[in-house]
Image (cartoon, rainbow, N blue to C red; front, side):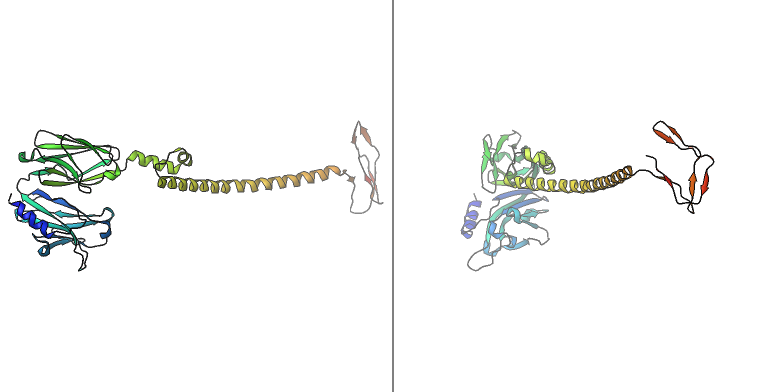
Length: 345
C-alpha cells in the first residue's frame, strides 16, 4: 500500500501525458537483462528519443539517448513507431521510476513521455522463458510465463499497442488470431496464439497482478506463400491462373508477365530474323541457277571445228544410228577454206 501515494504523486506530475505507451511495472532479476518497449505517435518519428530516471518528471536525469552507446542502449524503430531500451547487468540500486520520452523541444508543449517502475530483485515475481518469440503466418506460437504464488489469481496476456488483455481460461480473438491462456498448475501459465497474421507482430506482456514482463512477437510471411508468389512472377501462365490476394500482388504479377512476354518476343526475333534472311538468300540463289539452266536448255548445241586458220573439214564416212547421231571421222582432209560447222539437231 505504500506504493499508492507514490503513484498518485507521479500521476499528478504527468498530467497531460500524450501518446507514449509502455508497461507500467516490470520486474527483473539481479545481473539480468531486460528490454523495455516504448511506443510513440507517428508524428514523432524524426524526434529524438531518450530515457531518464526520477520520481518527478521535471527533475529526472537522462541516462540514454537514441544512437548513443552506453550501459543502457536505446534503439529507435521509426517504421514501427517505437523504440526499445535495453537494460543490462542490473542491480538492486537500479530499481526506481523511469521515463520513456520523445523530445519535442517547444516551450508550449512538453515532451511526450510515459513513466514506469522497474523492480530489480534476486528472484523476480514474473518472468518468461524467452522475451522474443517468432512464428509463421498461419502458424502457432506459445509463450510460457512464470509467476509467484501470490499472483496466481491475476494472470493476463496483453498487447501494449491497444491495451487489449486476455485472462486465464478465456478464449478470444485478437487481430483474427485465436488466443488461449491456460494455467499450467506449476506457477506458470501458457499463452497459445493460433492462425497468426502479419499484423499480430508487436509487443505484448505477461501480467501477474500489477507486474509485467514484455515479450516481442515476430510473425514472418509463410514460406509456401513466398514460393508461390515467386513462381507466379516467373511464369506468366501461372500469374494468369492465380487469384491475387491484393492490388499490389496484381500489379507485380502484371509487371512480371509483361516483362516475360517482352523477353520472349526479343528472343523470337533474334532467332527467326537470321533464319528468314538465310532462307531468302537460298531462294534467290536457287532462282538464279534455275533461270540460268533454263536459258542453257533453250540454246541448241553447236559443234564447230575451229582452227588457228580458216580450214575445211572433209569427212569420208558419216554413220547415223536411230535417233542419235554418231559421227565417225576417217581420213579427214583439211583444206584451208571458210569455217564450216556441222549442226546436229
